[in-house]
Each structure stands twice: as structure tokens, then as C-alpha cells.
Amino acid sequence: MPHRVLIIDDDASTRTLLAHALQAEGYDAITAENGAHGLRRLVQQKPCVIVLDFDMPIMDGHDFREIQKRVAPDVPIICITGAADEEHVPKRVGATVAHSKPIDVEALCSQVAELCRREHSHREPEPTAVAKSRSYFPS
Image (tube, rainbow, N blue to C red):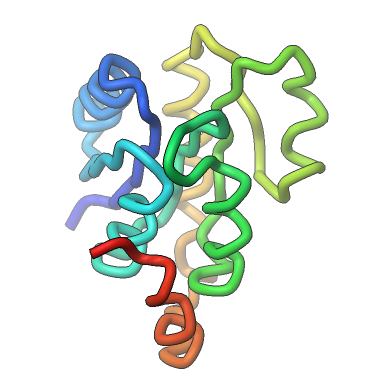
């Protein structure tokens, strides 16, 4: 079974580009157009890595990350940002690494591969943490 990667970005062309690139590398790439949809995907489909845009409507990357830390804290984050301070974003939000737009797809795929190799340390979310977070999921 291929490793699953969750791509959360409000830009459809970015989601499609990354999904196709990761699928070409053998990953099961799933997508979400905002943080709220991404949380549902996270709980239902349990990815080994999340590629997360930080500037999105409905639920931005920062709000997603705050909830994700309680629901599935062991799933690493690769941050996508349009911000000029790309090197400071990971430390500020707890992401493993950040990429500025336009995205270097080859570098991102390499980082996904490295993080998926660490999947054995991934733990399932606590059922109580998932239950407590359900109020954040839109109907």
C-alpha cells in the first residue's frame, strides 16, 4: 500500500500539480481546499505527511496546525508559504520544513520521501482527542 500524503491548499492548480507529482512518485495523494476539509481528511484517511498552505480562507494553516497538534501530533508538516520569511515559518508553527512559492516540486517530493520513511514512529490519534476536535468540523 502506498504512503498517503495530504495536500491542503486553496489554490486548485497547486493541489493538482502536487498531487500529480506525488502520484508519479508512487504516493497516494489526497487533497483538501482548506483547513476544515483537511481536518476531516486527516482523521478519516490518516496520511503519513501533510503538505500545508498557510494562507487560506475558511481555516488557515495556522488554525489547522493548532488543532492538528491535538488530533494527530505525530504527522509531520511540510509548509507552503508565499511569505518572504520561509526559513522562519517552520520554527514559528512547528512544521518540519517550509517551501516558498513557486514550489520546487522535486525538492518537496524528496522531503516527502524522507518523512514517509519515518512513518514507523507514527502513532494513531487518541480517540478522546479526535472526539474533542469534532466540533471544529463543518457539517
